[in-house]
Length: 368
Image (spheres, rainbow, N blue to C red):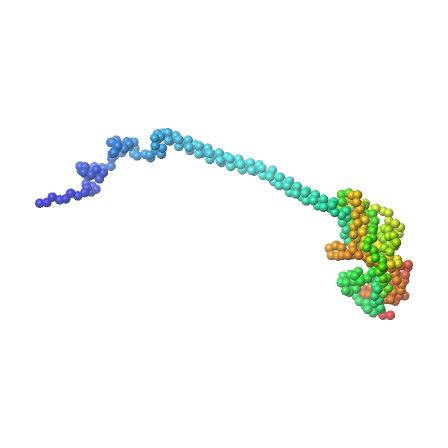
């Protein structure tokens, strides 16, 4: 009879797998050491403290008590650092909040300083520029009569409407300015405003580029629409010159008549404004010319160029004036009569007082 082969120990056989070959234990005997087992550990390991295995120390060679104290100190230092950071942030926010008004004040001061610098730069530019600013005046209504070298007869213009704002190709103010010559007198009105800090003196007129060799127009005499009289709260300053004089000087003016030499000086402080009405006349010759207003400021005399006409936006459109003396009789005569139309009139309806004509008819459209 053969002997059965031995088999490996199985769980429940009472043999500890950790110690093969050991004697079987009685059934029911636990294989795990009970808590508190004080038997010697295998292979010379360190004794297991009561209560079971603990976490091995992170720093070998340091006692657990010392390591625990070190951890506590590290935790305290960490919390102190976090607390200091929080306090620093809170304190920094308070500091920024405290600095806010000061920063805003600095910004306001900078903006004010920028405005002051800009105003100073503008002030310096005005001081370095011309002493007066010139703009169109309102108290000169243009010549009372115009003349032309062309004779328009009694039918070429008769019945044509006079358009207040028409172009220079049809009867209008622009047409008169371009194609006709003021009779006996011309001029302008100009408003001036003082720009310098010091007092500015307006002294006189000066002519330049005078040419009095033009032909004297004898073709047609024309009266434009009449302007009604109006009152003014602040009368303008009147001055004038006779262009064809051997020695033109600035003179006083009464209406369109020149008087004696002009001896006044108009003083203007910074920001002061005044209107000047300036008349230029001729008696014997037809002339073209330009003119300056002489102004004194800061020890220097300035010639300010006077516009003969104004364009869009109050800008000068031309600087050349023309004026012609009377030439009697004219070949044709026109007035702007009723319904604002050009009317041909006979020379018997024109009466002269010196160099000034006057229309004595009724201005009705007719053919004669």
